[in-house]
Image (cartoon, rainbow, N blue to C red; front, side, top):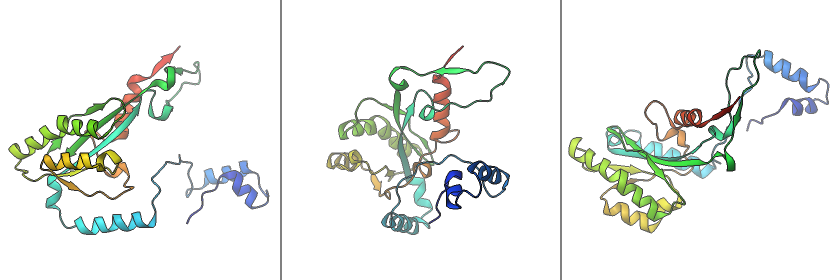
Length: 221
């Protein structure tokens, strides 16, 4: 395991022979080091790695199958921008621009969408707390018509549906509902990052998230 150290911890580790500021200067001058934002990721344990490797080995050669696959995902957008962070290029000769956050954190919106090699579903706006009944209603309103189009216009008679492993996805109610839609489910490994799943037109969820943040930010003069 590679440990991550801050400049302060590096200075402490060598008994403060050099100051943390000197450590930062040396790191800044190094081509092998760069200052980056640490990003969160699912806690991947050994059994998760085994399951993901087995999944890859099972489907690696089944390239034609993926044309039948429908991938789905949901995403929560924060209306004050991604996680409340706002960056831009600023002219230092002018006053600093401030942006106003809305009351109670600015609010958010949750959406769901799906896609396949032959197109994508509409984007569903999810309102309120989601349970199995809400989720299956989303499938009826957005997935069912998409599957009908695949069957009638693309010859995909036996589509395969991918979804996450949330409790509302795995409930008996949801499983029975999906079976009634005559859809085969694709068993998806737990702790699979979203970045390897749904891609939207023009980029991924991140690019859409940035657009939402730009359009919803209110500036103050």
